[in-house]
Length: 306
Ligand code: PMP
Image (cartoon, rainbow, N blue to C red; front, side):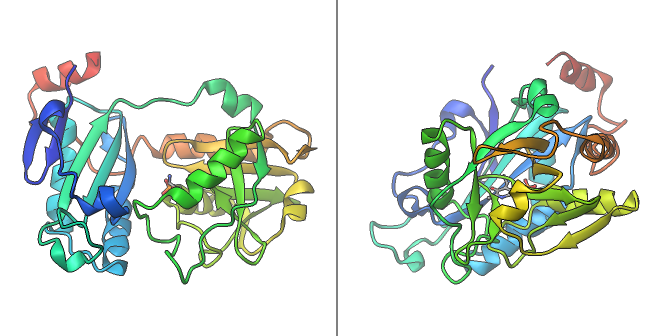
């Protein structure tokens, strides 16, 4: 079925959702985005995602032409028009159409679009068995270059790392920061558990300030688990009891081998499964509703069969 896409103030069919070849999002990766997820008729941590989108835009001096409240409405309405209650949402704001030069002043109007689609789930066996990963030579960007806290359309840094992981025969890479400390994976944050303490690199360690990351820290503290944000090295990962990645699409995914070293027992263990369960439980109640009781039963019914 054709998707309905929000594009610059209109809801259009996928075929009509086209942007100019002069759009600086395409020509230069000049723009910002969010990957968001809806579960059980609610958009998980929507406010947090919108805040990060507006902060990314502020940092690159891109003025989003809609208020965060309007943008929240755009996300919810796009989901409704596609009859989706469980979905992956891609919200993108580019510098807009300009000329062939770099100068953003030549781009008078940002391009805004929102795509909602049914979620492609990772195979459930990955959660039970865990991933094998490698550390790669390409470091995460300098904070002084394109700060990794900005969720920009410039993902080549991470794509290079992904290529290196693929060449090594693995699906995912661990990227170090320019100082050689562990930063994150190509599209996920990283955690380790050592002696029952949960440790993740701090925000300044050249990472995206992940929303799943923050949720997991919150859930761990609720369980009484000690949580630390501190720098650590590859060696710390090799000798950790457990390692896992977090992200909107992946949720929490265990890592059982890094650079050929088996991590802990080589199987995901209790704390990991408890946190994954807490996370999935939270997705039932967190975030604004997509369809409310006032929406016709017919609409909600249609959504169920999708
Ligand atoms: N790091 C990077 C580089 C990412 O692109 C993402 C998002 N896919 C994450 C971490 C995880 O962030 P979040 O939990 O907000 O999805």
